Image 1 (cartoon, rainbow, N blue to C red):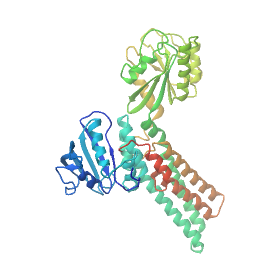
Image 2 (image 1 turned 90 degrees about the vertical axis):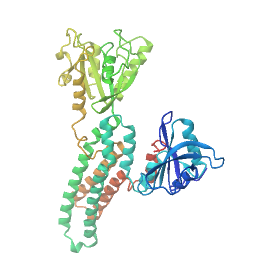
Image 3 (image 1 turned 180 degrees about the horizontal axis):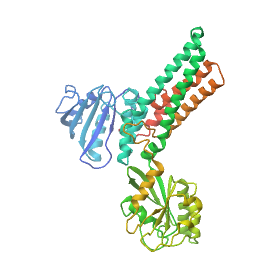
Image 4 (image 1 turned 135 degrees about the vertical axis):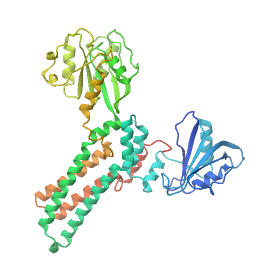
Length: 461
C-alpha cells in the first residue's frame, strides 16, 4: 500500500453504492490526468482542453482488455474544487463496473482516498474554510429546502466573511495596544482604553447576534426530536401519520395498539422533525406494554419538543394531569384531539401554568387543525433570525462553543479595563479571542481537529 502523503494523487467512487445509470470515479492530485490517461484508450487526456468531457474506454494496460465505456471530465488546477488537477470518470452504474474502474486507476498510481479527503484538500489548498467544509456535509445531509438554502448560504461564505471582518477589527485593536506598550510616550493611554472599550463592546454585540442564530440554525440543520405523548387511544398515531403525510403507524380504536416507540421523519414548513410516536403512558401490569411505557418516558426526556395529546371527548383524568405535570418544564404544545365529537374537555381543568399556554384543538379523524400545530412550532422556535437572505448563521455545536469562548475573552478584556489592569495583560485576552475566532474558519484550528472533522465525511467527498 502506498504511503499516505498530503499531495499524492487520490481516487474514490463519488456516487452512492448500488445500481444506477451512471457512477463517477474521481481522481485528484498532481498525477490525476497522467494516471487516467494511462488507463484510457480512444483519447489522449494529456492534450485535451481543461473542463472538457471526452469519450473513451478504460482499459487494463497489461491485457488491453476493455474495463468499461466511459465519459471522462478533465479539469486542470487551479480552477477545480480541490485546486488540484481533477479527473472524473463517468462509468456505467452498478457495483461491478464502478469498482473495476476504481481498481484499475488504483493499480496504476492512484491511492484510495480517505473519507472527506477531497474536501480536506480543498481546505488545505485555500479553496474553502472550515465553515464552508462543514456546509458541504450539510448540503449532502439536508432534509428540507430550508436546510438546503442555509447550507448553500454557508457554502457561499456568509459566516466566513463575518468572522474575517471581526478578526480584522481585533487585529486593528491589537495594533493600537502594541503602540501603547512599545511607545507609551507617544500614546494617550486613557484615550486608547476608551477606544478599546467601545470597540470591544461593539464586537460582543456582533457575537451575541451570531449566537442568537444558533438555535434556529441548528434546528434547521439537525431537526427537532419531537415526542408525541398521551394516554392510550387519544390519537397519537393518527397525528403522526398526518404530520408525516403517510400511514406510518397502525391506527385502531383499541387502546394500547402502539406498544413501542415509532420514529418517522417529517417536514414542517422546512423544519425537519424526527417524530417519535410513543406507547400510551398509563399504569399497566402487562410486561410488554410496561416496557413500551418506560421507553415513552425516556423519549419525553430526550425530546426537543413534546406534543401532548388529550382526548377532547372525555374529561381530564389523573393520567392526563400526570402528563401535564411531567412535561411542565419542557417546550410543548398541548393538543386537544377529537374535536369532531361532543366536547367534554374543560380548559379550566388543566393546571394553572398550562392555562397560560395556547391550546390547539384538532380533529385527526377529519384532518382539521393540523396547520395550527405547524404554526405553533414556528412560533415556539423561530423568530426569523436565521432565515434572512445571506444571513451568517451558526449551525453546529463546534461553532457555538468557539463563539462563546471568544465572547468570554472579550468580557475579560472589559473586566480588565474596569479593574485598571495594565494594557499588556488585556492584550492576552484580545489575542485569545482572535485565535478562537480563527479556529471557527480553520486558520488557527489544531491539526487534530481538522483531521477529526474531515473523517466524518463520506468516502469520495
